[in-house]
Amino acid sequence: MARALAASAGDENRLALARGVTHQTISAYWDAHQESTLSDPWPIHDLPSSVDCAELSESVAALAQSMGTAAAELDVMEASYLIGVLYTATMPGRERADFGAYYTPPALCDRLIQMATEAGVDWQSARVLDPACGGGAFLSPVAQHMAMGLENCSPKIALKNIVHRLKGFELDPFAAWMSHVFLEVTLLDLCRAANMRLPAVVDVCDSLERVPEDTGFDLVIGNPPYGRVTLSPSLRERYKRSLFGHANLYGVFTDLALRFTRPGGVIAYVTPTSFLAGEYYKALRRLLAQDAPPASIDFIAERKGVFADVLQETLLAAYRRGGKADVGQVHFISPTPQGEIQATAAGSFSLPASPDEPWLIPRTVGQSTLVRKAESMPHRLADYGYKVSTGPLVWNRHKPSLRDRPGKGRFPLIWAESVRSDGAFEFRAEKRNHKPYFEPRAKEHWVLTDFPCVLLQRTTAKEQSRRLIAAELPASFIEQHGQVVVENHLNMIRPVGDAPDVSPAAIAALLNTQVVDQLFRCINGSVAVSAYELEALPLPGPEGIAEIERLIARGAKASTIERTVMRLYGGGKR
Image (tube, rainbow, N blue to C red):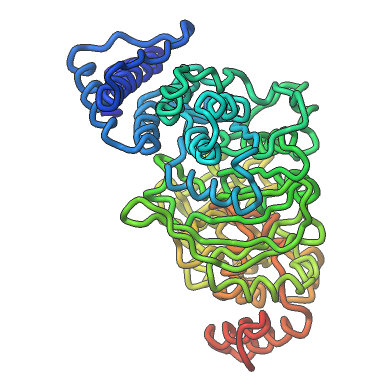
């Protein structure tokens, strides 16, 4: 249905159409829910006058009506999520990005609330805020937990107590209306017993502009929006303590959560994993370590079947404001065929001594031992005499210089496919638009490379059998051609001086082992294999790397090198 509606309207009308369809669906849901439970139904809460809804054709209105009626047979959390997905799927992409409209499945909401409970939230007294509440995915189950703790109170006192302790902020006025409707359905029995309509709980506002008005909330929970954002000068100044380089919305919302949470309170968020290691988040990592260290982190094992249209790797985390940076617990969660969440303990983690460095955290059950060993290994690529940079050529900015054949003044152009999955270098240009040679113009000679180094693919996904795919750029290839050009989908691990202590062949062999690949997965939080993360990898000391050099010199098999590296990381015997 979403695609059909999108195709039937121009961009400027699609938001009104999305709201019209969703409003009709929710109205039908409300009516069906009331008719099935009440003899004296209440009218649905009024839509804000500022919200425009498109007038629907007869057939679309009938379809929306049937969906809303069917949704009334579902649990309110499931119904609100599915109708929320209908809204986000039919709205224009630009508005969806601006609102950060990616709603949270009920099973993940339940899991995050469980993590908040384990972190110390008392539902009988806790004040709770969702600063980006969307369609109310967290407000409704939180209200349920509050209500269960007030069963001995009169309905009127219980309802007033919940309204006093629960708050949501939302930028999209239509989503705020959705939150109110579904929250009222959640608390309908209590509202009817108290003979009170639900007072407003959600403020329509820009959360980043809000300033805490009192001592703070016991819990700030939610799934904040994400995506790069350009902050106004005043907001950048306000949130500068957590910023390094460009700002991402979810990082700024994490800083906001710290401001709204009282000392001793809990923050429970669903976010991308990229803050765990990315250089742009090092100020945020330091802030969290100092103000609210993580008590527990759950990694989502499979993106498919969890979020609609979300491609980034995702985690759930609970932080304690003012807590100690002690050992945190890790779980590995995945959806079951029944739509529930299965959590498997994956071990524990400690934050690094310098918390702005990438956080080394096990991502699977078997990685805990590897992480504990790596935490005590002080050596990095810099100790080997190397640094990491990106291949200098952004090919689509230099199209006129690409060539199909060799010739005078032309040099081999090294693409990512030249680094084979088995760790070998093979000069090739097989993909569309890839040409094998580059003829630099007068001002393009800066892209040339004339020294041996290690090449490593810059973009890999966690679903691949290996994240680190490296190959030595042989000195013989450089000698044959004089110079080469490396395209920017490759990292270059390059010597700092003329005679590094470690050979490029040894570094490539080390990075191509399964052990180091697993270790990298415990640092990385995105599909990008960044220079920053590579330079943070814990590596064997001089004795260990000398042993690898000897194995390479005598032509040892990859399996022999693998066993040796495994032993160096504490995972095997000589």
